[in-house]
Length: 135
Image (cartoon, rainbow, N blue to C red; front, side, top):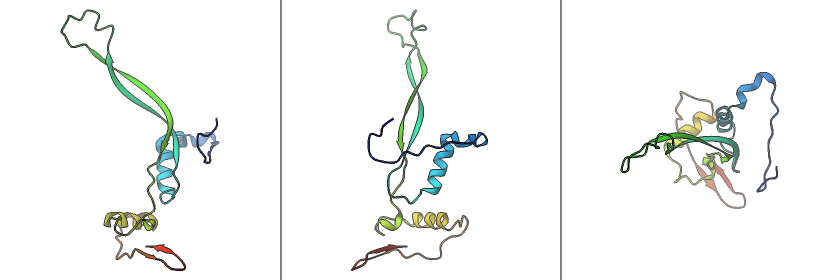
């Protein structure tokens, strides 16, 4: 099917023993882990099921006037691309916009230091003939 906008479509062909990668939760987890600091937007094809309350026609046949109609829950499935919640990398944001908690989370993710806390951090922007943003 054609794209509505520009972009790249990634189609995966999986082996028999890789069925757990068909689960959308697994794909979301992998995208969150390995595309954390990517600047361009990413979308994933998802199927969502929402449950809606609708009047139950059969149960409301004998309903007296003025009574509350009986309701039933009906699943409604929708499909479509869902934009991943990728935010701009923290070194591209101004230091005023970044919270202390975001610096700590970045340290833990980038350096695989789950239990360590960063001793210090320095977030700066250099402008001149060469522009540089760094943490």
